Amino acid sequence: MSTLLFIIFAGMAIGCAIAMVSQSNPLYSAISLIGVFISLASIYVTLAAPFIAAVQVIVYAGAIMVLVIFVIMLLNVEHSEPRRKRLKFLVPMAIGMAAVLLAETVFILHSVQITENHPAANISDVGLTHSIGVGLFTGYLLPFEITSVLLLMAIVGAMSLARRTTILSATARVVPGSQVLAMDIVNPRGVEDLRMVETETTEEAAHLLGVDFHSERSERE
Amino acid sequence: MGPQLSWYLALSAVLFTIGAVGVIVKRNVIAMFMCIELMLNAVNLSFVAFSSFFQDVSGQLFVFIVMTVAAAEAAVGLGIIITIFRNRESLDVDDANILKL
Image (cartoon, rainbow over all chains, first blue to last red; front, side):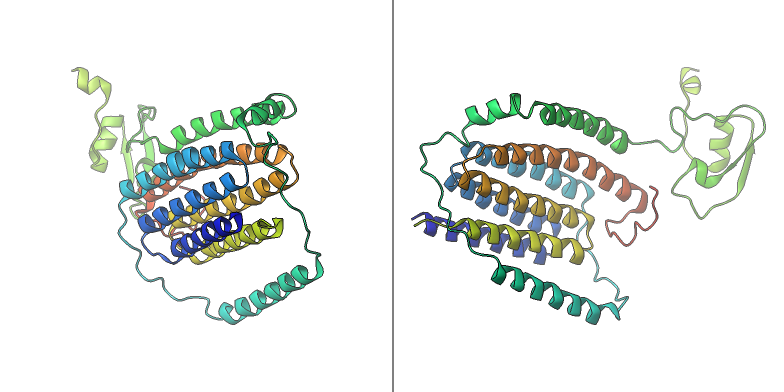
């Protein structure tokens, strides 16, 4: 019975993974990846790890994939054009190196003894939430705390990365007096335009560059 | 007789290989990101299999920490992807060929 379940879910996982790689639309590959996560969660249940299975569904299939699909739909890129061919001479070299890697894998699989382990009876409490909690807060307390610091860093990093900077950012001001600024310093997208602008104030610079800028001072007036 | 430990390790290896091939083959940066998630999951599967077969809870604790790292990676990675797209109007990794935004 458990063999049948393993074969079903392993087949689902491999099929969904191959579908994910072969899809060209990122939205379809995201949905295939959710299939991989669900089948892996089912395998975790058969391995007597219910907590990890629940976290797999909630965190991976729930939170992370919702974030990924949100970004895919936000950016709304339809499909990539066929990539241009380049570095053609690398293709036979890649095939040769893949053959070497495959030969190494077959050698390792033949030379290593196949272990005859069986999973212990399901009466043990390994994998239950209780034993995982005890492990996290006793023997693995330091990794747990480091993980929390990592999450804090991720929050700060994501916010500072995704913050939308205006063309002239709120903290940037052209100091009164004669300033020489290249266009690509003020506007990162206009890399082609290298004309110099010489102004006295930020408003004047924005006006000369043809960008939209309203300082708080001009709004107050 | 249930499935052997080597079956789970073989499934993990297959999934990891598919993910690695995807990272190499794909050109869309979001698809590459999802292939990296697939590789993380393959490693998680081998951790859980070892933990279950050797009756040791440490493997599942590692899986817990790997999941946290994956969540942090998702947040920061998608932030980087959005910033690259905003500056380059493209998700092709070949277009992001200089090390600045």
